Image (cartoon, rainbow, N blue to C red):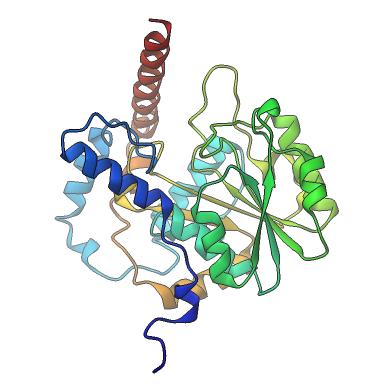
Length: 313
């Protein structure tokens, strides 16, 4: 009798993040004093003006129809403006694909760029989804160990030691999940130059761009390392900055030919989702978006200060 499940999915490991999160929630439900370190969920609500605009959008009949696979133009233009404002990356709306959350953007990027036999460098520690997403493409994930002494910031030397003729892509994320490491701007630029020298693509996961504290500064790799040309893809979303993990809205940004291929894949792997909802979250009346980000930053900063106070006492 043939196997009931495909070989591909038989070899796919379950999500460790979701398993830990489910365990923590079960223990909490049982009355145990548990702090969950599984799913990365902000401990504050989605800003009110986003929720209110989403509720209003539910009653607009225009929003009941199928939407373009790449995403509605208004949302893609809002992402263009947000990207320019927050990271300094200049793009056009035809370089944006709206996805069902950040994880979908990651998997779509890898499916678009990789072939079986390619190798993907992943600085470790890393988000457990990355190697499983690489596995689905037939490529091979290659962990690159970072050091505590260097604050878990990957270096060019560490990447170079892991590079082989099969290396196709580097997954770069700063601020990092799970370490929180923020790579300095000059280090980000050096990594980008190294990738450009060796014709290595970079997927820059920028979902944590606003989770920086103290003197740390977020830098977008394509911005500080123009030497990489167009061999990059940026993935991002609203989940972390706006506490919208359950809203499932992310995006992928890249060169037009890469995005054309990504849209073609998306035409086959999902039906367009209700993406009118988050438009007001980052566009809306002038200043509302800034207000939402300020609220989120204020709440995160208060949690950070509370943690420091608890450590002092």
